[in-house]
Image (cartoon, rainbow over all chains, first blue to last red; front, side, top):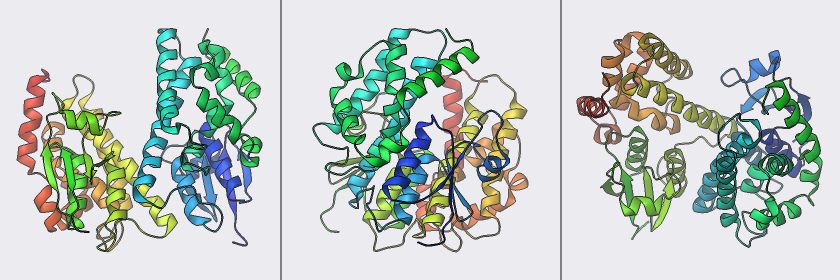
Length: 219
Length: 219
């Protein structure tokens, strides 16, 4: 489509934002990236997502699309002539959507590894590894979550690749030992231009996590 | 489709379950309803929804579909020859999905009106009315949320009609005074056979709420 305006409001370490960046890149959609300050929120973010005030927000020809999984689905439907992310079979589509929602649990247990005070470190680690292992079971021996093709569930999880190092450092474990098939999947994914370009470098994310911990006095 | 087996695992006062019952009725799909005990969960529920162990679960030819909004979307895609719930335009579809997710906030603030101990009753009431009023703004002067047609967002919210009375009794307010357009919408909806048949009678729900409060010692 010509003369389209595609703007992405995003914050660089966000796994939710990375979903959208990778989805746009997979569809070869050019977009203007607008980095957001998540402490002092911009007027454009507040105007475009008044309900949740969160990134990512895709602004397509002036109209906002919020919530990252909604955005990925929207991108899949609007730019149809390239690859498709979601299967057309209703049951396969449902399964991709069900597990993409489950990724929230993985992100959430992962976040607790590095930015939560107190509590039992061992339990946090086990909770995270259990949720990731559940997804590893869904992946099985397939190349990608959807089979031969990089698709919706891969995109939903992809941002975690830039956070593995941070999780490992604070949780004191090896992702490769605990979930080797997930690491093999990651290695296949990062060969894709969309992923290598838009999924952030792990050490940068680790530095970010250290800064946040320092800011909130988490030791 | 002939020779189909459609089973619904459900629990009668559930607003999530009512979404699925109404969706199946709108599509004229015959189904076997299996009431579930939510205290002692059945082996079929645990087998069909091992991740969340929640109702509703639709079992279509032996395959489970979990999470009510997923189920409604699945029903919309599988039984296509009747009405459709979701718009085909990607932006309108996104809007319906965004607000259907928001309904969770309405259900959640509503639940706190009757089953939460302590806290500030006035605040709970205001929180609930604010979220419902937000949806009233989306409805505006339209017949249904999607316009002329009863659709996805209507189905997502429909179960609340059987809970309004309970919310009013414990919150001490009138839904008609606070959100008159929502009540007008409800009156249009209950003229539909799908809604009058499957959305439960408000006094039954109120009795259920009283029993739960008694059981958990909430005064």
